[in-house]
Image 1 (cartoon, helix red, strand yellow):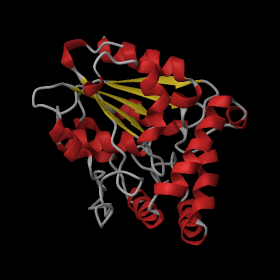
Image 2: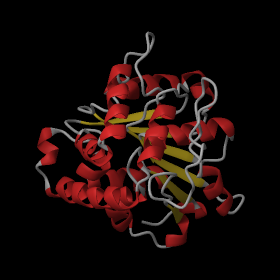
Image 3: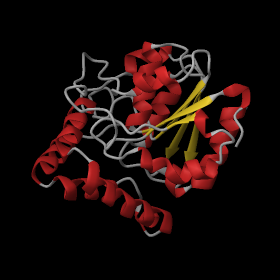
Image 4: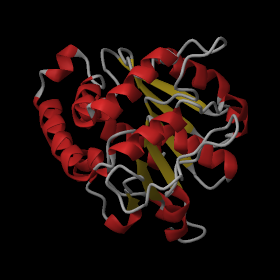
Length: 263
């Protein structure tokens, strides 16, 4: 893959995973210049950023995931950045673009939602009771809880495939070795407060929304909502896919990213 006009790609993973989630995609991209790709692992997920209290949310807009600004400072001024984010990473990119309009050239958002928890006027999220059970599990049996939650990213059919089995095995090893479980729980508490719907209209850049029709983590209704509210968005649904189509439909995802980045 060759990026036009000297663009860079910033890839942000989802909650309770790490930058390792993009490993197979990055290999498939085969970028001409690896320096053009930034793939940080976010705080408390095994990365280089401290957890501390940086996940605390502020107001109705919620938290911009710490570490993103640090990475953006490493990218030369004037260099166009294409943001690729999954789930929490997608939400973080949207929030960052709201705070710094035009910092990104384009955004490709996978399994994205502006509001993770269901609200009276937003039925496309998780019930608050489910989030409370997740937090209880993280406190009492953290490793087992994260491994169980990882399965929810995939449909029953996807769980039988080699790419998913390989990913889950890799994910389990990383979880055991590097994750700060208390920090993961703090991050989830912050995510449960985030609601960025009010600022979506300010995101004027091109956005490609990629969503599995069988996503149970962020229901597909969230993607339709974003498609309606973002001024310059396109929606691409992958029939039968769960929350992580870049894993289960890797080749299709790489082609989409290549076309979107260079069009």
